[in-house]
Every structure is written in C-alpha cells, then in structure tokens.
Image (tube, rainbow over all chains, first blue to last red; front, side):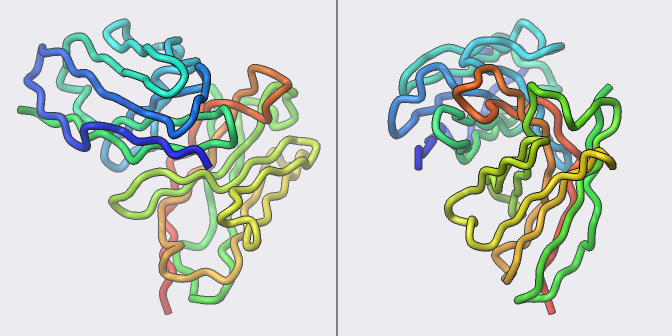
Length: 106
Length: 125
C-alpha cells in the first residue's frame, strides 16, 4: 500500500496570506495525485487532479505542483471560505488518502 | 448536474451486515468513462477507500477490507450498493459514495469528482 503523509497537520494562516501544504508518497505515484477540500459536515470537494490540473469551477488561487513522491498545494491568498481540511489522494496504485491538513484562521 | 445519494440504516448491530445503496441521478451509471466507489470516514478521522465497481460488474476492493466487502451494481435502477459484513465499532463512520473518473484504460478509475452527502452509520448494540 502506498502511504500518503501530509504536513503540517495544522496550518494557521491569516486571511489574504499564502498557504503551502505538502504531501509525500511512500513511493512514486508519478503525477497521479488529487487534492480535496472538506468543510465540516460536508463531503470532500475535488480541487486538483493530475497533480496540477484544477477541477471545474475551482478558483485560480488554488494551484498544485510536484511529481513522483513530493507534492504541494498552494492557496495564493486565503479567503474566508478556504479554511477547511485538505486531503491528498494518490491513484497510481489503488487509492489512498493522506491524513489531512487543517487550515485554520490565525 | 450529477447527484449521488446514499441510503440505508444508520444503526447496525455488531457482527451484523451493513448495507447501503447509492442512487445516481442526472447521469447514467453505465457511462464507459466512470467507475463508482465507496469511501468512509470515521468520526474526526481521515478518508479510507473501501471499494469500486464498473457498470459491467467489475469490482476492486481495499485489501484490508476485502474479506468483508461486497459491492454490486443495478444499472436498471442507476444504483450501486455496499455490503460490509461482521461489523464492529471500528466500522462506525460516515460512508460516502462517489464517482471515479477514468482518464486511462490502464487504471480502473482515478479521482473522485462527484460525491454524495454521506451517511453516518453507527455500529452499536
């Protein structure tokens, strides 16, 4: 099983600032990586797939990068609606998720 | 707009079988580019893929759950279902159904782009 490790567990950011979230795979997943946003009481929402392609309707302030084992999700200027938990997910070999990074208001 | 809706009992007794159904509306479950999956999330914890199915009936299960999981599809009703046997308190979770988009024939689906709202299933006597 490919293990996905996200860091940090919690990220405290002020509105308008940049947030950088990391995701590491235990072995290469090529670019077969997705990012999701989850707010309390809601289902996850697809943000990014193919490591860097924004899903339909996702604002340009969300960007993804990386390949192989190291990936980054960047939110360029945090809006109030962006405070949530973010998960990475690999689909190179079955499907596994990271444990999540909570982005909270500083 | 594609919509998925989970349904089933919210309370299951230990050692019994959890059964959930996902009804797909606004699109066909028989579309060739998509698989359909189940994911769960224990309270306050992360996401775990349970299994996936193609409209033809081909299934893929999480190895850690494989011995207890059965996923089936009913194309006439545009539904797919999950059965998880011999449940324990550790199976208490919000269960989501989701669409899995396939971008290459080399893999049985990639990312989950549409999700149901989720349904909480509690295992307790």
